Image 1: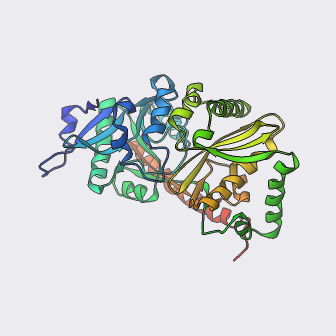
Image 2 (image 1 turned 30 degrees about the vertical axis):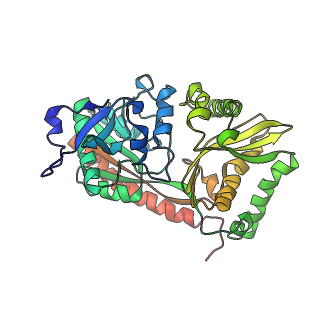
Image 3 (image 1 turned 90 degrees about the horizontal axis):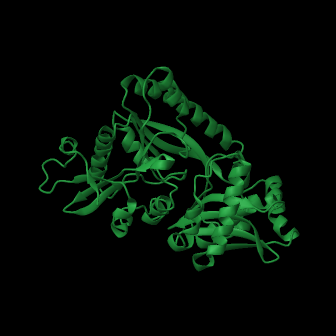
Length: 395
């Protein structure tokens, strides 16, 4: 069951002049929310705000109070039915978000202003674009935004952060005076009706086209077979291999392995409908793999790893094979994760990503707002500069 927001706040967040008010609750466990009702609110192209993915993070212990991601999901109900929801977490750190606010936190500390805890509306450890205010009515969306302030007050959070929102959603959030919009950038791929991978390659300049073809030949030269696996083909044994790859990659990067072993152990049961693995097999053994997720017309790359000596398949499994799969299936959009200018040389193009922020301390909020004006101009110029460096034919 959801926990009602304290009555003193609830009065400010019910729908005015409406026979049936919208009641807001907090759920500390996604599994206490009906999965079917939640999924009816989710974008059809988004696998990450699906109930199953969020539940897998919580049930595996990857997301919990102990890891600094305490669920406080905001629910909007009318006549007892779920009409809006926000995947929401109370946090005491800024890890695993990929929209970096460390400078803000450090500035607050120097000024003696408390910064944590904070509320984060996002999919943990997942820098993928999608709707964050899950609803089908703009009025309910505004009530959810009001509700975020109520949750912040109830939890004594000092700020609200809505990360990797869709651009349309971001633009509506930024219209509210208490929020400031932020633009960052990633590298994404969009399908413009290519007939096959070779048709896609014709967009490249000759030199880069040859380099892609050379990268694609690595698997053949090493007698490795590239396969795309999903559904029942994602066996518990394969999930265990992908877990080992994930842990090895994070160790090599000296990064934090945010996902627990249990996340991968639960994968074949909870995520087989949305998970896609691009793997390389050599002598009947998986030697490299990239774990992706797919829903509707969109594909998202997440985690890569390999056996020692097989790193040369990274470009094939993380970019070329997924793009080819998109073309074959008619999927329209591919996101390969955060950062990495090397993505651009494989045909992913620079573009903006969006977030919205509210800091309850007025002085800190104003300082962040001023800094973001300058940052926005810098990011816009960087995107323009990067677009001149793409591997495609000059127009």
